[in-house]
Image 1 (tube, helix red, strand yellow):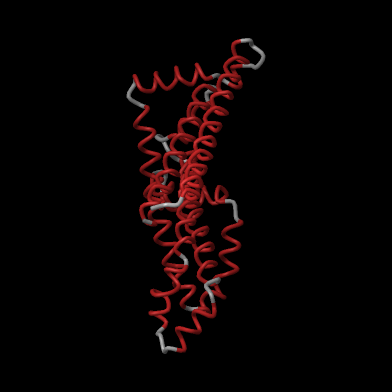
Image 2 (cartoon, helix red, strand yellow):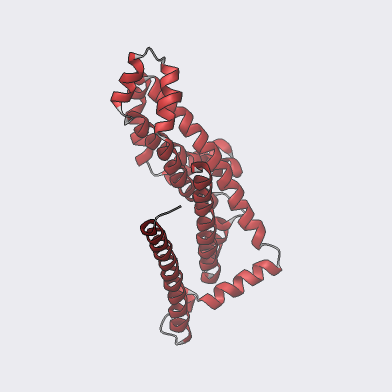
Length: 261
């Protein structure tokens, strides 16, 4: 049985969480309402800023022409594929770097350079090497997500409590035992946080790739809309992108809660 104080504490947390969600949704609704009012009153130029009504009309048109879900699914598929590959490769490489400090010291400056290098600058080279298709989009996304994962996970591995490592070494534990019994469990939260970051980075990489080579996807909708000066289509793409990113982020949070349990 929980004590009265504990029940009050749980109740307060639930109330605070409800209020936070309520005001977040309220704030979003207010922005949409103000945006539409400014457009109706012609205070803002809808040719440049579009409006919520135009966004809804564009979504309906895309739905009626059977293009809406095709573009959304293309972006989701590419993001999930690059997210899975990026997380797997990033964790494997980070593990290798922890295992072999000599290799880690050699690779460290190159990771820093690659992380700071604008990936769009590599776009033309990627297109020439891998062609103007989904391969180039995945490679573009991996260039962003893998480097971030390696840096974050490897940093977590290196910050594992040294005293615990020495304690295991004093009991003649092998490096393999230390890694699987201490390093990985100790960095569970680090890896989960890397997943949260990686899903966003993968989506950014996919959109950048779609800007350059794709003929389908949300990124394609945005770049095509800007080319034909259809700001309604551009804003629709941005809204769809926001919805997809929110769904993916909360999916990772759900997975985190399940794994924690």
